Length: 299
Image 1 (cartoon, rainbow, N blue to C red):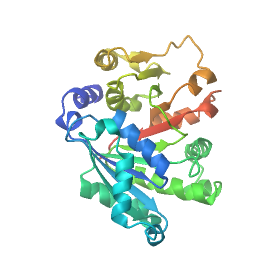
Image 2: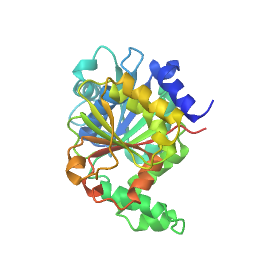
Image 3: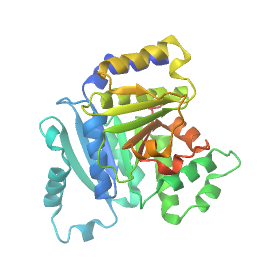
């Protein structure tokens, strides 16, 4: 079975993609956590009774946090605040609060304990902004740069955040999404740049997103990947048909302007596509909305 057939099976055949989905949503900023939880529940995850979200909230000092409110009361209040009203009866949600010291190990441990098959990590703009994330990737793309040299060129806080994220991406075996929060409010207009064949794995997420009413997804087939063969076209047309016309293909005869990018709520891309995107001189890169970068599972 080739790559495209596997993707079609994921979307239309495998029970775990049509049924049970168990997401682990990790964050240190409550507002970013809320936005990522909304993104997961409204778009990324299938709407079935088997779907679950485990929230993992990291704090600097647990003892200090609990001085004003017992742990159980805080957890119940946060769960009530996080759970989308429309999904209260469908998605099982649980919350754990952990100290930030051993974040990577705690995420991997919780993912194993909860049987998570999707990991989502939310980063607020005060933790790492899009410009810093782009700078990091550009330096990583240069093989002459060591990891230590790259991190030395970033602020201490940004360097530590990116070090932890890189460790998770390298060691994690389940699909992993990095959410760069840029004050996401609505999830109605979504821009999907496809810059390499490896990015096609994100179409399993695009399919779930396209099932949402009132969403409009614009796919930019930047280098002709979708048009490269009949199976690629079949995959795209399958999603277009299932989405009732909510997925559109950007006309490459038109220039992408900043105004269009600014009108988008969310950008979704694969990790390989993100690497190519930041290395490409595009006039609209400084206007990116909130961004979800997805790395597929690895064996």
